[in-house]
Length: 579
Image 1: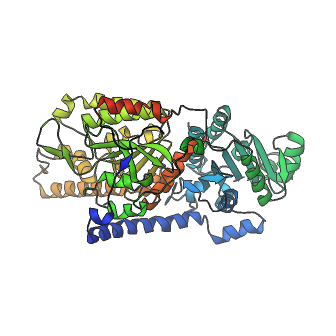
Image 2: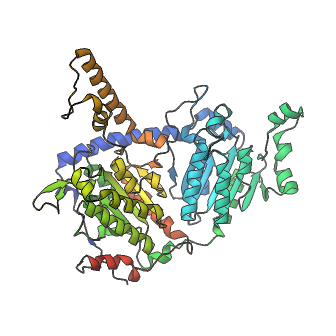
Image 3: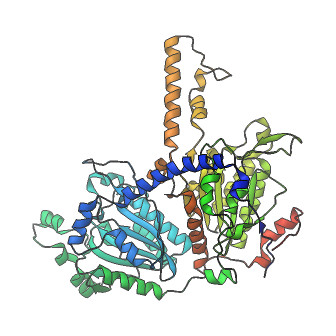
């Protein structure tokens, strides 16, 4: 077995914190996660029971029922983009739960797949503002991980009252078809099942797929019967125009007609079973997935809801990696950052996490400085580690709890701009799959440098504690009103009315920024891919890491004997440890 010096990390929760502290943390996190569960159920209900009943009366299944029957029995599907458009209303005071489309990772015949399913309980599966972007985001995840992509199509076309927000633009609805093409060009299998409406853009989406199935209720048309009646005064049904009789037997735009939803789903499962099996078992070797020694559910008692309170980052890792075994790389430098290797579900993954609390200052011996900030040594370390993970083909997980970069005269003299640019360049050009988790703070350029969403991680997850912003609300209010404050940040105006106006403006700005940092705001705007419970974090990471190893031959994956990681260890004078 290749020598990878994994060693035990972490402690039992009762050795880290007293019962009262743990209870307080659990209560605070529990309230936030209950809100998450309530809102998730709200989204999953679509437009409600009456619309579900209407679908069933047509002899059809809902999108989530189709997804559940497509996935392997007893497995869990992992949705992304659940809260896209959450809380927004559109003309007619209408809402679009999950933007009217379900996108989810699902295990089908033992292979992880990306499933994209129009929610036929929400405006008959129409495309709302952000629906195209959500579909494209799912397609990009599939492309990056080479996951078979399955479209469950039941789409009435664009939600026309808001077409200006979903039709034009670089990521308008038409970009979906470019993504279809890029997936095809990269050899990613695409399967499509058409269950009902498939109008206009919805009609184009299945066509590039490798196999297209249609039920007897399905039709694919550039323009539906209503539009043709208005344009050409012809009375004809959409099934007459583009049903399975036309597209399976005449046009060749579809391959197979089937009687109903269940039969179509069985056909899709059969096709996936014909694909190559996952490479994950090969890369695991003799290492079976093993749970951490400390339960992931303990993260809710470990992480303080108050972002100003510190915790031990090693304890977080101990609740994510197999057997709580971890190889910390280059611990001698950049103490504010922890990086290293652990197994997740039996497969190697790299981890980078911000240390919290106070750390030593190598520039001023005997002095301490706050962690959760990027300094020169930490930036250099994680840049080298990120490059090594890319070189070795190790998927990389970024666990963010960061306030930003160090600032001030000394920081500029140390060249933090250049060091930060090196890290950004590295993360921008890496080919290995990278995944980002916003544990709590995700502030300023630190959010960018640690592979925030603008730097294209395959998936970015948020917890209910996440706070995504340029800076904290009070700090931003001071910056916004800086011209009205003195050097001590006190209001310069002497007129009582003017002072009151400035004070009110600062309070309003601070409150608005604090509101904007709610993770549901980020999720609504697609500034993060999914909000997860802390106890679910390992489940998501285990799935994503396995997906990274499922496909073979499309990227470099080195065996551990020849990792660049070992070179880093020797160069910093590492001492040999266990296995």
